[in-house]
Length: 102
Image (cartoon, rainbow, N blue to C red):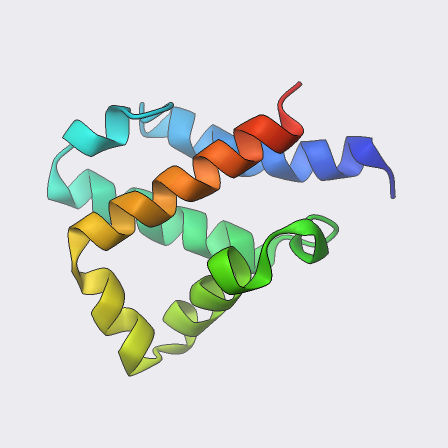
């Protein structure tokens, strides 16, 4: 699998931000319900990705996503704070945009 497959998976995750009209920093100003839905969709997408996952920073994106979905109390508690969700989403967006934009 080459760069095209990596870019395709990255674009799939970035499309979630577009779906919620949250490209770039717009998600900082959205209501809590939309922020929560965006967070859940991005976390699930990171956990589900294939060829991209080994290329993502593990401790920053992959592990937290996996642990949230497993219901780990520490990670779930950490992300109950919406500012932590915002930082997480910002970091993922920026990383994918910078590394895999078309």
